[in-house]
Image (cartoon, protein in one colour):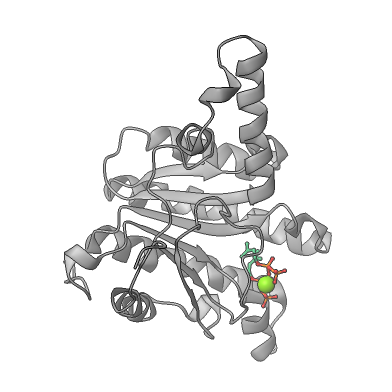
Length: 241
Ligand code: IPE
Ligand code: IPE
Ligand code: MG
């Protein structure tokens, strides 16, 4: 049964984005190898996806693997890719049952065959769903996303389909992976760091930022509820008085 939202619906963020950090430190604190931290991290997806769906968050964006994370040791990268593949294989039916619509933020061409096939299959199978918009950022970097948007606009201009003067913030945003989605209202980072690490730089312009000490594998429904309560207590001014 769906649980009641922790805050009033009128205060609910439309778009929650999470930098899921701290898997490695979670494992280290337990004397476990880092890949087991990632395994526990992937297990933490489901309750958060379910809670967002139940509580009326429209869009949830999860940072799973950055363009910079390829520079990690190859054993760790392949363990992560294997876990991602496994997650989408195992969870696809649950996502579909919950009316979740999945999108991939990042270039699928840069992913190994296995995870690419499973993620793209989930994107395709869920394309008609009307519930929670779940964006999985995989091989994602905000600078790469912004450069890609500029390239797409330049291609249109070169074809003569677009005048440079027509490029404004709205048109630019329509070339990002997040096209058509609301800006990020609440950006949560687990693991305690106070940095954006190249996540959704265009979309977080006026997001409320919350850095939590808890490592991602320990982040659950109650931590999310607390984050939403903290968000509901913020005063958002958007530059006005
Ligand atoms: C986040 O956990 C997951 C990914 C970046 C893929 P980390 O692996 O960065 O964990 P820490 O920051 O080293 O603890
Ligand atoms: C950000 O975490 C990327 C993801 C959570 C996927 P990192 O661990 O890669 O970030 P830094 O290196 O601490 O900035
Ligand atoms: Mg980290």
